[in-house]
Image: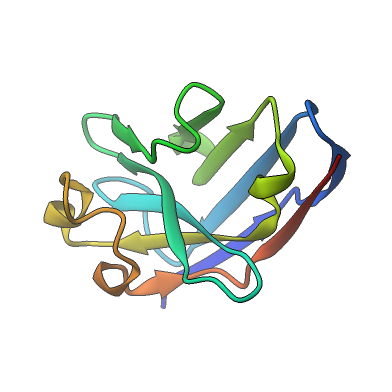
Length: 129
C-alpha cells in the first residue's frame, strides 16, 4: 500500500518562501509520475508541478513557473516543492500525488487530478499580503 505524507506548509508573507516535502511509504521511490496539486476554497484542484522520477523531466503550471521548483531525493523517498516569491493567490491546500502510469506525466495529462491514484492528506499554505 503506497502512502504519501506531506509536511512543510504554514503561513508566510508575500515574497517569502516555503518548502513542502512528501515522503513516499510502501514502494521503492523510482519510476513514478509524481506531482503537486493545490486547491483553494471554492476552486477546483489544479496541477502545480510534476516530475517523472526516472528521467527527472518536470513541468509547471504557468502561474508558478519560475517561482516554484519540484525535485526528488531518491535516497530519502521524498518529493519536494520549493516555493519562492510567494503571492497571496498561492494560498491553498497543497497535495502530493503519485501514479505508476508514466503517461500521466506528459503534457496535457499531468495537470489533471483524475490521472493520479495516490494522494497525501494535504498541507495548508497561507500567504498574506
